[in-house]
Length: 126
Length: 129
Image 1 (spheres, chains in turn red, brown):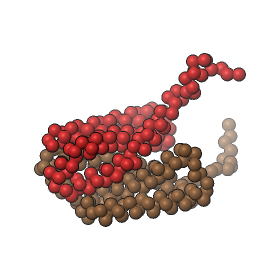
Image 2: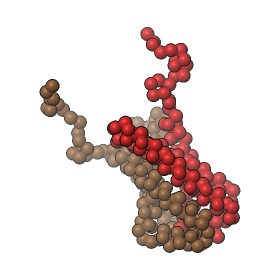
Image 3: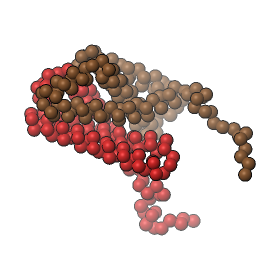
Image 4: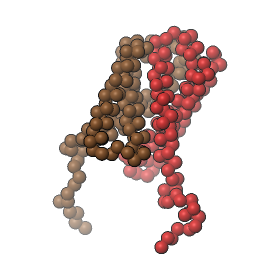
């Protein structure tokens, strides 16, 4: 016998409520980061050794600006999602667990916004 | 209520020798955490670029100190390892390649591939080492 209401059956989410959203986003960002990782290696290499003007010119070309914005969104989101799983695995107490996850999410949101602001500043210089 | 302390326990991590797949699995998690922390350095690099030529030059001086170079190369290797094992996870998500023989063979391929990719980055020569 099924005790679930017709509505809960239609939603099909079970007791976890949120479904597979977290898992799914982890995979989407992972797939996006596969090609973007090689782009990042190129960018980091330039930043480590190339003169200022060369790195600037390279980054303000539309393709590279799009790549860095896409990388920032995918990487920081992917990191926050991954750290959430680590926290859930190792912190048993409910209070500290929730506070840690919030702290991680806010920290990575802040870092991502800082990086995006820097990209907009770079674009406005170049 | 008396607690039976004589019950069988699962092998404790400190006395249990992890198989290669287990070592790689925990390394994937550790590199993930370290790479997340390393994102702070990325924010520093891009902010320095946004700050103009002078702050960019200062950033290069800092990043080219041997300690930071070591961190950058550690980041690059961790990134490639996490990438290789991440692709493996995406393959697993399709429900394939769970056979024991495949697991061990892919584990060796991942380790080799991440080393080769790091070496190729080194040979590419844009990191000034």
